[in-house]
Length: 240
Image (cartoon, rainbow, N blue to C red; front, side):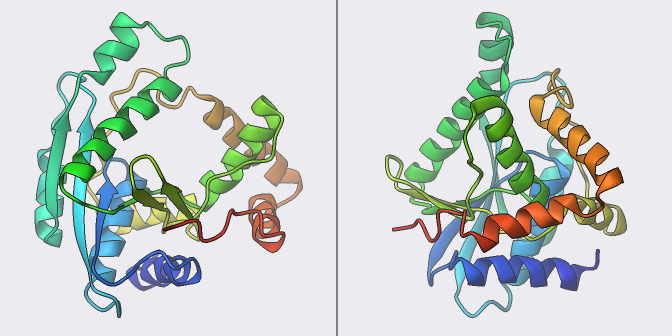
């Protein structure tokens, strides 16, 4: 994927769901993976010509795994001219050593977002951008249906009333395959996940199921995503 296509798809999502207002302070949650780094790259370039001015910051919640070096991520942010902060935590120890969670993803995500939102409130940053892409929207719908018995997925814009923070998902029109192509083409310094359950989750299972269905019905993910938008399944412009 070329840079101009990435910027076009990000802007399409931002404009349709009115994600950015004049003077916003927007943080990007950086895991070090391909998706979050692609989002940061796109927003940093879009910032140069978008008609509404906004400030951009990058944050990584350090879960406390040993031997994780964020130096390349810091250099990447410096090259983009984006201020970068690392939030130190003991989440990995709590989840895996103390609590010994059999299904650690939910607790880890909750604690990670809690640590991040607390820092954003301290700095009076009003919006956080997460790097969920088009495939994540579809996967989440199927996860909810299969494991919870309800129709639910992630929204382009969500307002967190308790934290007074608006969550944005500007990559919802970008396919995962395009992200992979982008990081390879532009040599984005992706950090390998140190999590012991990486690639062993329910989400990975759903991805495999969709991949098998796609062999018999090519384009199934695109059609599900189109259906989500066509029936106005997203909660809409949920912001304050």
